[in-house]
Length: 184
Ligand SMILES: [Fe+2]
Ligand SMILES: [Fe+2]
Image 1 (cartoon, rainbow, N blue to C red):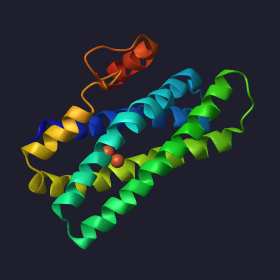
Image 2: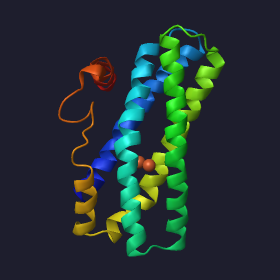
Image 3: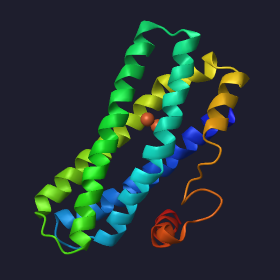
């Protein structure tokens, strides 16, 4: 498997782990037993920083190379849908992130609104990653060659994951500790 495809798969695993953590926090907010809003804010700052700025654009470039190689109509339809979803995810993610930044800063947000916004985001992203795993990722592995993968890899070489990359960004140390504790 190409390095890029390995990275995309690994990103999906990391995203699923973070979404599990977020879901647990949403459960606690929902049943009024707790909920760590700073942690949830950090999660959404991360989601709008790395997946929205590196993971999805990397996929977009991969889709472009796939289109250039020639793809079946059903794959084209799936790619068009995934591209729309990337835009929708970025929008939903930034709305939820801003809501959490507000809550941490003392803004009043209805519990039900926050939980519904969070659940909508986690379910949408979970479904989106699954759809990619089961459709376009399989096609890309068969269709693209080393030259394609090199183009995609080089375009994103400088962008590192601030949590799962070579070093944990200071801003995400608390979130990293929670991820490590929840997976051990
Ligand atoms: Fe995606
Ligand atoms: Fe993805």
